[in-house]
Amino acid sequence: MTSSFGARNRSQAFAKRALMPRAIGLAAGFFCVAGVFWEQGRPPFMWALLITFCFVWPWIAFVLARSAEHPAHIERRSVLLDSAFSAFWVATIGFNLLPSVVMLSMLAMNNVATGGMAFVLRGWLAKMVGITASITIFGLSFSLYSSPLVVYSSIPMIIIQPLVIGWTLYRLALRLGQNREVLRELSETDSLTGLYNRRYWNALLENEYKRYGYGVSDGCLALVDLDHFKQINDTHGHLVGDEVLRHVASTLRSNLRSTDIVARFGGDEFCVFLPDTDRVTAFQVLDRVRVEVADAVFGQKQTAIATLSIGLTTFDNPMLFNEWFKQADLALYEAKARGRNQVACFETAQSTHRITT
Image (cartoon, rainbow, N blue to C red; front, side, top):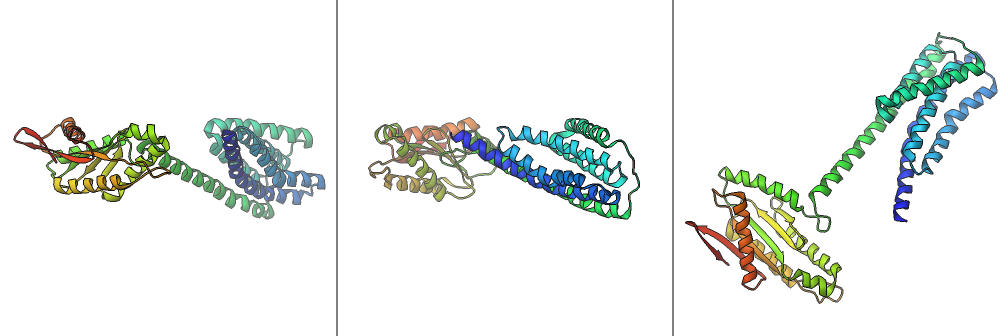
């Protein structure tokens, strides 16, 4: 049901986007043909046909696309019908030079915008059908001279249609840019917490590691783990578990600087990198996070509690990337071994490893 409703909304939105360019373009095309019709003294039924095509057909195409399961397919067919009908009027006005060139050029632009150069060939085939139909009904005639009236009546198409096509392509470019930004965010962030995901965080951390390898000092890496998170899920349910994860993410964000990098590393693990930060300062920040999480209560009955174990290490140049990460992991292991709900720091001094709190 939801999928069907979403597809229907997308179809309606697509149909609405196609309506304005077609309605404006055909309205401008009306004046191109009308100038010649006026000079030729065409009968009322031909005026009625022209008015129907230019002002009624766009709404018929809109209804067809809006109600279709695949609106893009219907819109392509409608564009081909635009080409056929417009070429029909080009032949009917005797291929009058200026309006014919303007209309056929705009149709070619529209075909390219719809389906690229491959679609242009289909558009020309549709035009040939329209021309053939006009010649069959009204006969072949040529009226190449464009009077001042015809020139003036072609101006709306010359000015307006390129603006419409340009505006349509501009809106499409904006939508593509927005979609690209959404896809980028989805590829970089964790959907539950809004933090960076593990893949993107690893890439950022490697860049920071290279920067610190060039002699920059004072950088700290921390691994944050929720204590007994499975027990929280089993006892209070996964919705409460999700609430805890979001709260931890929010607490980290509120206590960290904009230059710090934080990510959800796994199910109940978070990673934090604090650039240009010494161990004492990093410890104070992370311990404040730990206290805030420990003081919070969760769930509808406010009976669920959560604590954090945090492993912290500083960058010691020279150091391999994996070793840097391993030190934070060892510190986290030590925090859990000492009873959890605490921050443990890893220090390296003269090749002797020790854990401090």
